Image 1: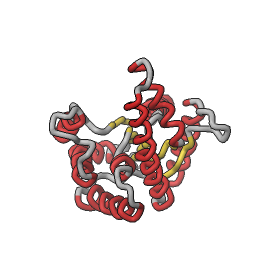
Image 2: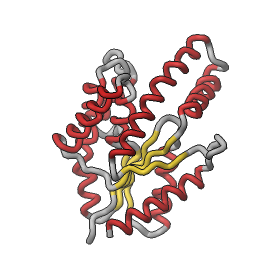
Image 3: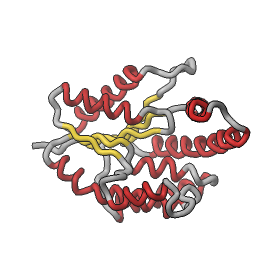
Image 4: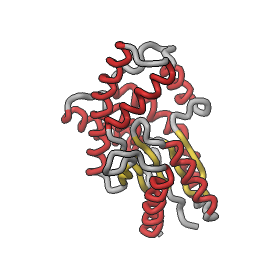
Length: 233
């Protein structure tokens, strides 16, 4: 029995990670391929996932303002808790599809760091922590769902406007803060896509600026998965 494939779907806000993970799982099942799903943070399943949930609810101070190295260590330990389960599934020949993984730490915590060189150093440090020190399973492929910053901002603004019945001046300031953060996060992802052989990028927006359908995006993902399978086996 050969080892199962380990595939990660990641991306910035509005990229539809959960939707694409669901479609990919359904496709594997339709093809008769053994498959399992994991998602992170594991809020209600892991000790550290539960702690992250508490932090995000503000129960332990301002988590967003926390140093990226400290915050990312909590997320890494959450994955460390799930590592035995992932290894077991892979050893049984089951393909594992992850909705977010170490790449989310790299993208989102990296987005907090303004300096380019400092961000590069952080990404290298985090790679060593997750895959070196903690030795969590390394994905065969990370599929990054790319959404331009302008589109992400529009989706975020629409979400806030629907929720609150319009955007206040303070919320407009938040949108601008989001812009800087999203730009840095996307830069982190672009850097990783250039450096890491296992990374693949799937655009979520067409060349004319319109959002692609989830079916179109799924077909791109499925092509990448098929190519990966041929390369591995």
